[in-house]
Amino acid sequence: MNETSTVNAICLDGPYRGALVRVEQEVGVVVVPDPTGTTSSRASYRITRERVHHPSHHVPFIGLRWVAQD
Image (cartoon, rainbow, N blue to C red):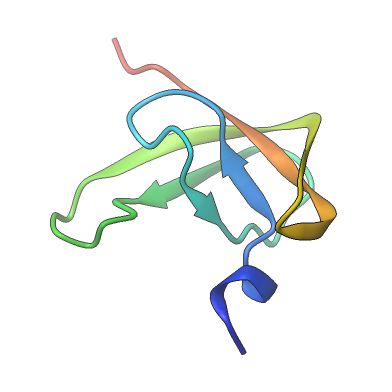
C-alpha cells in the first residue's frame, strides 16, 4: 500500500502545514507527530469540516487546523 492511499487529511496551518496524515476519528483533536520523522515533536490539530481537493487523490482530504499552544 502506498502513502497516498493511507493518508486522508492535510494540515492546513501551524508547524506541519501541508503535511499529509491519516486520521481515524471524525471529530475532535488529533496529535500529529513530526512528519519528517527527524524529531519527537508533536502538534495538536483540530479536525474540521473543511475538505481540500487535490489532483493527486480522488477523495478530498480532511482539513486539520492547528491548535496553537500558549
